[in-house]
Each structure stands twice: as structure tokens, then as C-alpha cells.
Length: 179
Image (spheres, rainbow, N blue to C red):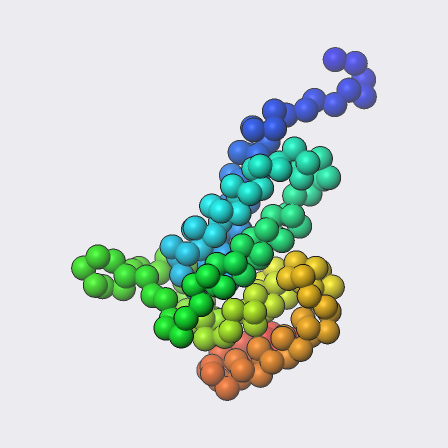
């Protein structure tokens, strides 16, 4: 090969490499959005199926993360619209015992998960985008397909609701949640 020639990876192999590198991160985001390990796995699978269909175009633009993020969040919105109901979803093993929660490695993680689960899906999505994925208000608005002012008001309302629903979290995390 001559100087300046680029070695291009097979698209299928490039996609597999991307999935292997980013699966854990996207799984955490999906879990925070859904509050349920099984729903999170389904959400990630559907997201990667959609991404795979357009991989060559997505990967040609450089970093595929913004595209994957947008698909993940739009699929989450579709999921909660289809499954909307007043009863909280809980994962259980067939014998009726609660499923082990491998994602929650500490008391803080458990409290955050439970607090997020008590929020409305849109509020949960805004907090996950802003504080767990560390997106700007503009980027979060782009992912959610809404205005920046909607992101601001949803963030404000979600944090206020957290202060009421989970005061132990505000005491534990303090300024970190209020930033």
C-alpha cells in the first residue's frame, strides 16, 4: 500500500467492533431509562438492529454515538408510549423472587435507580441525558426532538420531583444532583 492510502475495515466487522466497545455503556443508559434490566436489553437490541441497517452511512460521518443515542432515546419513547400504564414494571424470576440487580453496585446506585423509576418517562430521559450522559441542553433537546426550553423545564421539574419523592437522594448526593 502506498503512502496516504487508508485501510478500511469491512463494515460488518467495524459494526461488531463498535458494539463490543460500546455495549456496556449503552446498556447502562438503557437501564437508567427503563429501570428494568430486561427492558433495557430489549431497548439496546432494537437500537443496534436499527443502527446496523444504516451502519455504513452512520460510520462514514465519524463518531456514531450521536446517532446511536438518538435512536436509543427515540426507541425508548416508542417503548413507553406502547407500554404506558399506571403500574410499575418489575422484573421477577419465575419462582416469584425479585431478579438480582447486577447493575446496582452500591446503595447510591440503588437509590438513583429507584428515584429515576418514580419519575415520568420524559423527566427520566432528560435527567439521564443531562446528568448521566453529560449532554448539553441543546444536545439533549436534539436527541429528544424538543426545544431547549422544554429540556430546561423538564430538568427543573424532574429535580423538584426528586427532592419530594427521594429526599434521601438529595441528602446523599447533595450538590451533585443540583448542578
